[in-house]
Length: 161
Image 1 (cartoon, rainbow, N blue to C red):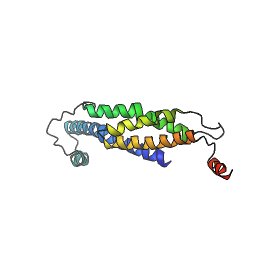
Image 2 (image 1 turned 90 degrees about the vertical axis):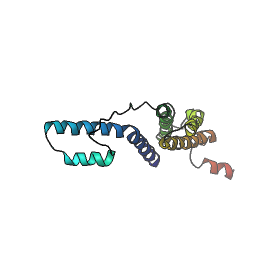
Image 3 (image 1 turned 60 degrees about the vertical axis):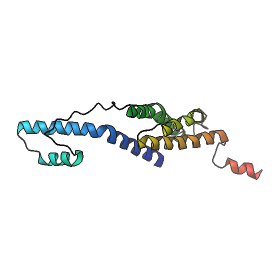
Image 4 (image 1 turned 135 degrees about the vertical axis):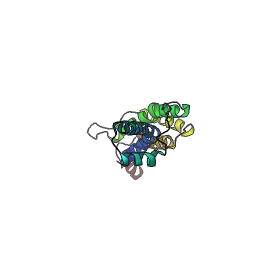
């Protein structure tokens, strides 16, 4: 559960800081302007808007497209193509049922080194943290598969014999 919670918390932080902040500022500005035209005073919303976003409402803001920065596009591609599929693959191992028998998929061992790529070419720290978490988890799963043990204590029997 710690692995899942940590991964989702960092993923949420990534989306909120990069994408949802600009969207929230834009929607808040439209809402404030709409209520100003109607004549309804929304002092608390305006206070939150000025406090959180540090902007002047009388200036016309032109928010850039969310994907205009090439580094952010590369980070998003790393997230979609490398980090999320490896996260899904490691969750398949963690949620594999004992009833289904031993976990036989070797994709974790084959694809785990791909998680190193975002570690060197990241522009947002959240992508680095997510790729390190996924790399460590998939390397652990790959090590468990290469070890060939079917249960947790099989290595003890090897040393007893």
